Length: 326
View 1 (cartoon, rainbow, N blue to C red):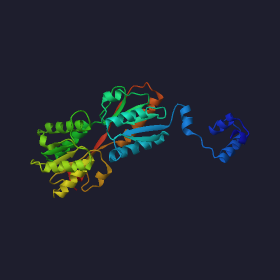
View 2: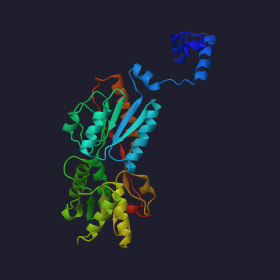
View 3: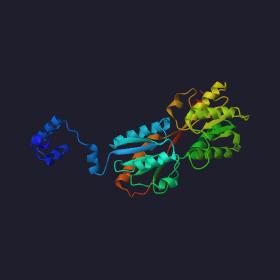
View 4: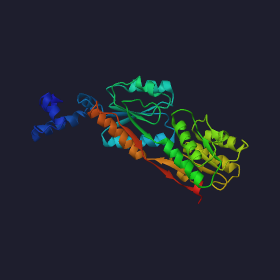
């Protein structure tokens, strides 16, 4: 290209990089050569020379989940504003896949990682610190020294349960409870706290665990609750997909929602806004979460030694037809 334009390699570089100290005549000669040779600059190589690749990786459990798909879309939109291209790694919530994702993404070709672990513990994550800036999402695996973003699941679940209690419901089932400090465990803690504060017992037969957090799991859980011999007048499913499965079973059994059984979910996925009835749910502020995730990556790129931040994501209880009626 330099030979075709009759200039030095340095002059070609100055023109391509918009250096001001180039005469217009020379600039036009180089641009004509660029057009003739159909030259396209290697953006990745240029970025690496300046210490940046321009790529942000997102490692999420499953892209078929409407919640994680929406989250990936939100992060992608914010990243684009920062001239970052998003790469997505699906881990399926499996410990080995999560570990491999961390190892493969710890490279100079990636500027930062937004990681939502489902199986790895805090100790597991701490054992793979790497050198790439990483922001952790959710409840699992947030050791000291890492930027971390999460919803207050205990408080959110307590608000949902208090809403159901306030409607006069006294036999409130919970679907998705787990032990420990994961999502299901924290939401179960909020559920139990609200019942106890209202003077209601926590009925073990109304608490369903061992679920996959999908529509089928919600349907199976609702069937088991209705066939379990205990009265049920409300169901709090720990995500919206399970709530949609529960709504299907209630309709098939001829039960009215919310007259006979009120139903609430968590996540505010789009399907719940258009279901019949529309679904009461917890709506985490995904735009806020995405903004903060990208901000923390960019901040750590500028200052690798910055003190780790823990960000709490705001949420709103969206009361819709499945608990409030039409």
